Length: 339
Image (cartoon, rainbow, N blue to C red; front, side, top):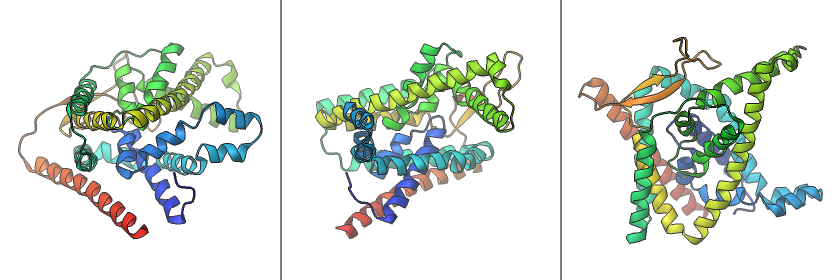
């Protein structure tokens, strides 16, 4: 891990966090892929796994500076700052383009994932029976997740806690989309729309001196759901990082082969030519998020016909590949200059 970072390094780390946050926002896209391609995946995992008994002891003893250094706090702070910035900026822009230019956005993502597969695979030379088996298993799992039908909504707090644990998979496991997993579990709307809206409404009301929320049983229920989901996400993030840190240390080649497989399998989710199926309430009305947009329930994929729109989409696939290759070239050039 880097003990010192230049100002440029810090800016780029925030930008990487922005990219990771934007990817996490889109059902079917994994922020972990961004971390892997951008070259900070292992540092991210190893930093998170430092949140352990030693870190807890440092906090309890009031040694906050030591705790911050121990968990690689500067790195995590910059990265998560980028994710937060992304939530309030880039991901909103991404939402706009997904609504108005959906095919071309998915085509770009599809191309970027193809470029990512090339990037990760080109330097991996440890192909043998074990790693090829891990690759195949990863592809099968990725494709299987891509074509599952979503379950029904479930607000049981134990299940919500489980959803929180699973939802962070996209940050720690490249190729798995946490938001898409929530769609499959049936709780995307409950956890990423309704509960978040409840928090926003509560905050707005309390700022304006309205404390009626404490008498609103439905609002209290939604806030409980959000708290449990958040706790589950934190537990999942730390737990996955400890597990992946161990696996990367002892089974690195098999892990990388599996990750390549997951990413290949995720191409089924980001396949550009698909019809979006939106969530519908019992009364037949579309489910809307806080911005009045229809909430995605699943996708219906199809083979495109050759026309102008398809050719333009193919161009965007090529652009997506080019973006990843350009980032790879820049990263290689930077490493060469630095030494």
